[in-house]
Amino acid sequence: MRKKCDIIKDLIPMYVESLTSEESNQLIKEHLHSCKDFANYHRSVQRDLPNHDLPDVDAEKNDQKLMKDIQSMFLAIN
Image (cartoon, rainbow, N blue to C red; front, side, top):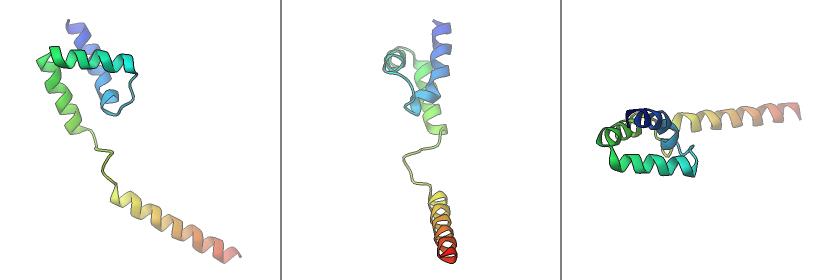
């Protein structure tokens, strides 16, 4: 059982990022329900990984500045 837990732990970061297959998802979900240690590990990974659902304000500002710079360069050429 320990070997299976270790293998599934390797998959957790990808699982949290929704990068695993349906078959892997099923194995991970089954293990989540049957292994308390694994469930605790899963929660810690969820907490530690960046939340991609939240907008990155700095990145958005940088993108806006980049677009303005490109527009200025384009207008200067024409």
